[in-house]
Image (cartoon, helix red, strand yellow):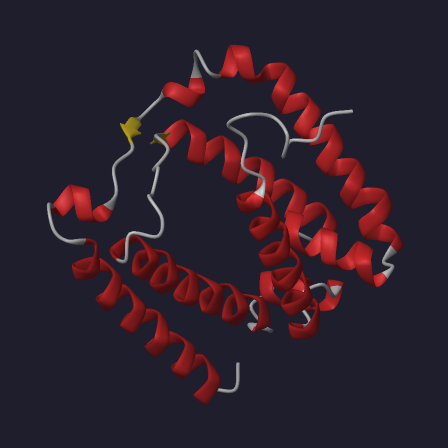
Length: 187
């Protein structure tokens, strides 16, 4: 049996880094309480902002880290194209699953790790069924609604024709201020 390491042109290292960071992120989600149903529902009801603070912290660290690595030449960013149709369909699928079960895909994995039966039965089944349905319908969707409002691989720096850091630094400051205000308000 051939492993992906022995296949010419295949580098397994990025997959291993992705797995390691995924496990670390899942651990931090669990430690932060974001894998608990009550915390997720509290976020949806705007009574518990734990999930928002975790996600904003992840965006802040990720945004600065990725752009620092890009600046140092360690990574190249390959921005995928998008459209309003993709965002609407993706948001609806994500939102329905989130509202029905009270978990998002990341927190489902963490809750399964915690032994939550509802995440295992409902969440994993939902992910598998939803993914299967989307894959089945994709050929039709990709020619129709997913193409509506196509904006290509546009990013804010490309839109404004500025260096990435002109967007990253103010965005990071705004996120940091929002996190500070949430914490000060006890939310």
